[in-house]
Length: 113
Image (cartoon, rainbow, N blue to C red):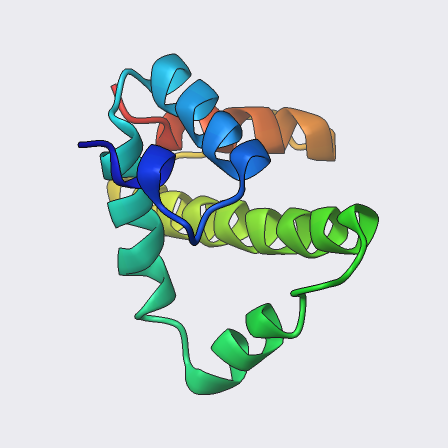
C-alpha cells in the first residue's frame, strides 16, 4: 500500500508532487517520504520549529523557504566538493568563471550517477 496516497496526513497536491518527483527520479513515493523523514529528524529543534512555523503560510512563503534550504544544501555540497578537489589538487574552472558556471559545475560533480 502506498502510504502517501492513502495517508490522511498528506493532501492530494503534495501526494501528486511526490508521485511526479518519484517518477522523474525513478524512486517510489515511499522512498521519497523516507528520505524526507531522515532529513527532518536530523534537523536541530530550532529548525524543526521554523519548518512547523511554515504551516498555514502562503505558497510563496513556503517556496521562498524551500529555495533558501535548497541553496544551503547546494552550497554545502559545493564546499564539500571544493574541499575534496583541493585535497586532490586543481581547480577546473577559469578564474573569471561566473557564479552560474560555478553553480553548474557544483551540481554536475555532486549529482549522483
